[in-house]
Amino acid sequence: MPHRASWVAVALSGFIMVAAGAFAAHGLQGRIPPRLFDVFETGVRYQAWHTLAMLAVLVWRSRQPLRGQAVTLSLWGTGIVLFSGSLYLLALTGTPRLGLITPFGGLLLMTGWLALAVSAWRSRPAGTAG
Image (cartoon, rainbow, N blue to C red; front, side, top):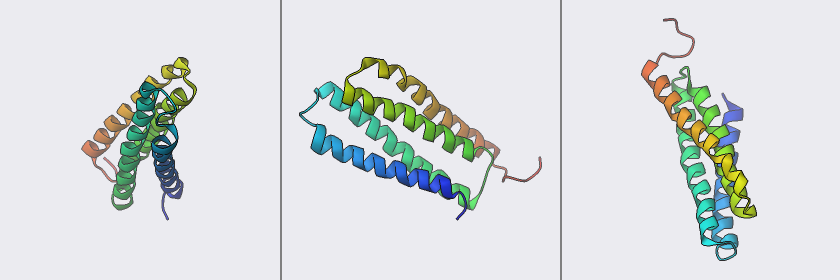
C-alpha cells in the first residue's frame, strides 16, 4: 500500500478524534466549566474536519500524485497535534499558557490549505518535467 505511514496516521487521528468526542460527551460534560468544555469540543471539531481532509488528499494522491500533497498532509498532521492537542490539554488542565501553542497549530492548518491550493493549481503529476 503506497503511503502506508500516512494512512496509519490518518486512521489514528480518526480514532483519537472519535475517542476524544466520546470522552467529552460522556466524561467531561458537567465536570469542567462550560467554557473549557467548548474549548475541548473545538479541538475535536478541527481534528475531525482535518482528518477527513487528510483522508481525501490521500485518496487523491493515490490516483494522481502531485507535488505538494505530502507537504499538505504534514502541515495538517502537525497542525492537528498543536492546535487540537493544545486545546485538549488546556481544557483538561485549565493551564492558560497552553493556549499560546494553539495559534501556531492554527497557522499550520491554514498553511496546509494554501499548500493544497498551490498543489492543485500546479497540478502536474509528480515526476514530470516542466
